[in-house]
Length: 165
Ligand SMILES: [Zn+2]
Image 1 (spheres, protein in one colour):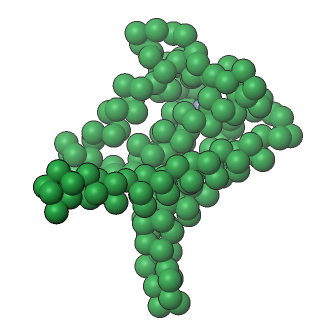
Image 2 (image 1 turned 90 degrees about the horizontal axis):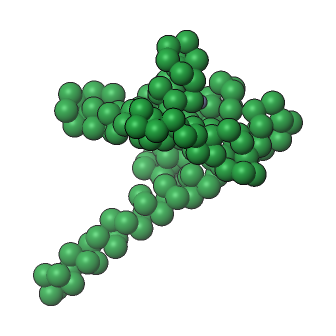
């Protein structure tokens, strides 16, 4: 996927995540929802642009397109107290590169240079690239909704049962 696709994906995903985390039910809450979208949207978009830095440094779709890089950004906030949400941008970049191309990415680099993609991936230059990007984003927001809205309830339920209340 090209930069335009990655930015579109990151911005739409952040709008979805912002709404899921701070859903405005009344007009007075709209500003808080918009603020959350910006708070998430900037780091997510920067994260979504980062993996393709390996077009200039290292091997493209390998050096910065792997699980160790994702893990590093995932644990960075806990270790250093900044760069929250950047990992979401990195993750969604990987998803789009896997779904949005036939070539795929080297998930286990530097252990293995094998690139993993979907056989029905749509090529970067395809006229369908934008619609694929939007569809991938919708699926991502739906999965995020399940995690954000359902997992806490499920955890609470399991906790309740464990404590017998
Ligand atoms: Zn990429």
